[in-house]
Image (cartoon, rainbow, N blue to C red; front, side, top):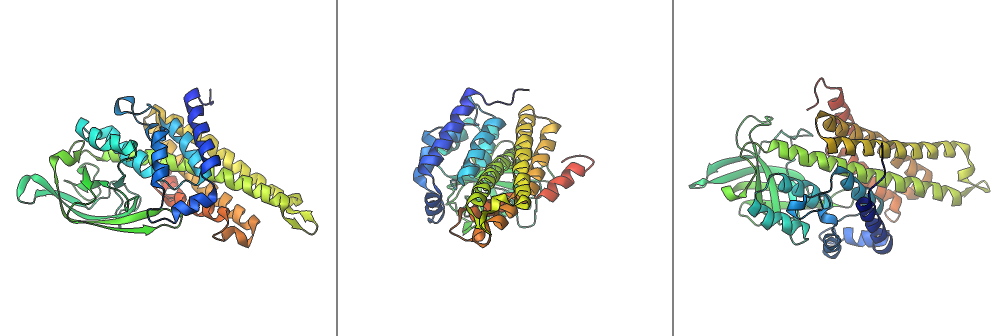
Length: 381
């Protein structure tokens, strides 16, 4: 089995690595994260100009036609740089929905603008009581508003990444069926300025931003329906699966950096007249950190290939890699902080920010325990 990257993937990897090395050091990242929007508009447009925003999109939609492996190549490098720009929200989540289900007019108006860096988007699907079950949607969309062709949306969405900056919000709402039914979910493209939308943006523990979005009798017409009415679950589930794979790749990049920084720190930190890297107990712990990284990277490559092939194996692969990243990330992050000592959790130390992002990823799109439960279930949903 050939696990080497092709020429295009190597080009993207090199491009991202050079950008992070030359233009995205930790201090610069902190400046962007501390800004009002939580990222740099200039950097985001640079991503679009370099072609990173269209890596995984189909050629017919203006992309490069890349797949899951290309996505992991980019996201692993973003993890190493602790990038705060909303790639996950725009390209993987909202972009994943639009490229799969949007009609020609919607792709022209929304998708091309998003990958060109001219439109900020997000996907709002998580609700306060839904947990990790994607189909648990109580937000409703009903015909109303004095026009039998109009839809009236009501409900609350929580932890909407990039929700405070998004100009287009893709909302998953229930148009039929019971609360957890997969059938009956419809996707709508709603302008953030639409009447009846309330947005409360807030910083997250990992230095990024998310939002809680309220929908109070928000009106939408049929031209804003993305895909087929009642049949939005499969599209939504596929986009979230891609996003899960993406954050796993990001986590592998973060774990790699934490391991490298911990090993380097141990060589310069002196105790009892010798570097702590000479202590056998710490050597064993750092070897375990390295092993956890390599195991996660290997499983990530396998998962990306399974997702590329599709089918039931792809879904199990997503559960497997998210479980692995959850347990390995916790181990690597905690070891890195402990070996660095008290300063490993200070705001000024980059290790603490890598650890926070790794912790947040561990809970995104399902915890390790939840994904293990899905693997252990008689049939994976």
